[in-house]
Amino acid sequence: MEIQVRHLRVICEIASHGSLNRAAAGLGLGQPALSHQLRRIERMVGGALFHRDQRGVRPTELGALILRRAKVIVLTFDELEHDFHRRGSETDTSIRIGWNDSALASPLLGGLRDLFTDRPVRTRADSSRTRLLAQVSHRAIDLALIMICGKRVLPVPPGVRTMTLVREPSFVAVPAGHRLATEKEIDLAELAGEDWIVSSGGDGCRAVFREMCLAHGFDPRITHDVDVDVTREHLVAGGYGVSLVQPTRPEVDGLVIRPLTGSPMKLRHVLAWHEAGPCVPGIQELAAGTSAEYRRMAERSAPYRTWLERHGEMVAG
Image (cartoon, rainbow, N blue to C red; front, top):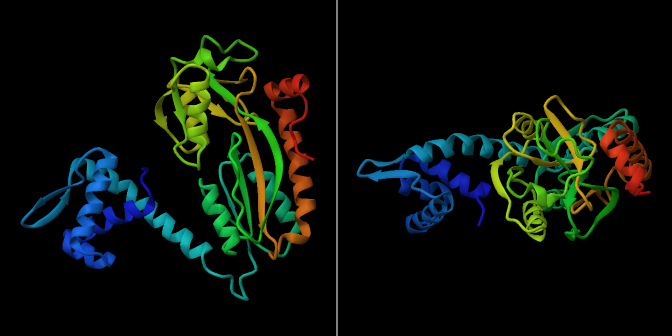
């Protein structure tokens, strides 16, 4: 089981109240039920989060570390709930977009700005495609841009329509001084002994990555969990490991991006919208414009341009 926002909320409530009894009342739970939840959370994180004595509870060193992050995450999630899970009022004319780590986010927003010149566009990033689809289904957002790893099936709720904008291979980023940096493409099996820098977010991408590595004869050593693209690239450039990247990512100093032999992992960039939403009339134009800009991004990337010349176009029509 993975840590979820509800678990972080429990930890924050306990720390805020300084007592399991008071925290249980605030959460609408019985004290035994909250104690059971806390024990499960502590098993997930691998250690005790609170010292318990007659004066109540106080964070352990591990608990204080997790609390610093948990408070930020819970506040951010509450803000997202407030912004996106409320129905738009008559005075709210904004177009609301959700997206997860797709390189097409910028061209998509540019297309929306051109289509809806009199309406502001608001965005939120969310690593979970499941949550994004649920938000579209409930009309909490008007449009979602979703990146899907591998051949995973996208479960589409009723009332939601989808379109694949782009199918592309996943490339790998290695430090400029890496032993394989001069190769035109890299066999995944040759990276068996590397430290990997991998995103901890998303629905299933980490599992797809591990399955891919196992199929190539090794269990990847995931050393760094990092959700931000730029941070992952800086870690690679600093020599701390290697990482999968989208092929349109530009190379930066200290970092080299190369195709993987045989393209073992594919990515799909999918647009999702509600069939009764405000974006329906402009979907085809928006999709065409975003795909065209993707082609220009691909042309600006020398490794990807070379790969396309050998393997053919990956952009959906």
